[in-house]
Image (cartoon, rainbow, N blue to C red):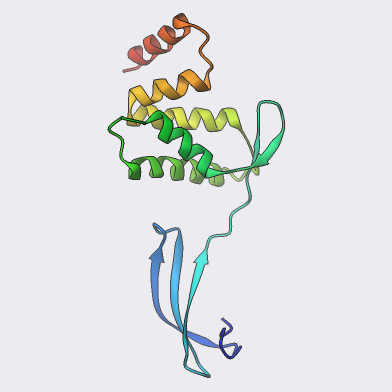
Length: 151
């Protein structure tokens, strides 16, 4: 690792720690020439995900959109912020591990509904009502019956 102060090409690692919820590694280094210390961060290189929307347009994957949907569904429900963050991270990790650079919004929506179903049934129904575009009360009741039957 090149020293940012003197540009010497050799350094030694003094300390290594996980950072950002174990998604990166923080390393304290010392230059072997000038003895100045500096910090580097090591992250896993990921394939950029492209989301294919219902109208067949494409856009870059944005984990914050998933998190915002989860937050709206869980509003005024007993679901912690950490749990919501973990749901969004789990979905992103699952998609990254599929080794597919393109993913459909329908798959993302189903993954979000699966996570919400496990966390809070009311949040699940809220999200499903928007995601599945319930047209009337009968469609809503069918989803509730399906939820009750699968308990």
